[in-house]
Amino acid sequence: MAWQRGRVVLVSSVREGSMDFLNIVPRIALGVVGSGYIAAVIPPEVITGWLGPDSGWLGVLTAVIAGAATPGGPVVGFSIGAVALKVGGGTPQVIAYVVAWALFAFQRMILWEIPFMPARFVWFRAAVSVPFPFLAAAIAMVIGKP
Image 1: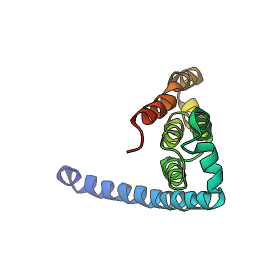
Image 2 (image 1 turned 90 degrees about the horizontal axis):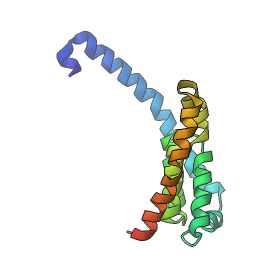
Image 3 (image 1 turned 30 degrees about the vertical axis):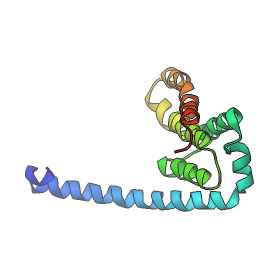
Image 4 (image 1 turned 90 degrees about the vertical axis):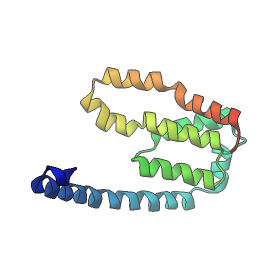
């Protein structure tokens, strides 16, 4: 499409796309390597104890709190979820973690949402979203392991 719109648009698009690519690659690498370090540092017994399949609803609540407190972008949030699954975390608990991270990451709300939207709206959105990690975990518990 950029090619059809002319040389100037094509060159500008390629330049901006290349810069975006160069900016995102280090973040992805840091996220993947960082989650590997997190997996190496946190003993599997801690993850299976707090977020394991036998932790039940207390594990889901712990996952929701941990998800909300996890800083970073999707590379970090999803990588930590994958690591938790790999070392023995329960599927419903990890799903609750990832959904809570996506909805409530405190650092993202404070740094990005509140400066651009009214704080009342951001906190209302977060409050209305509270049931979703629990609902996702409940659906995963009903469905069972694939």
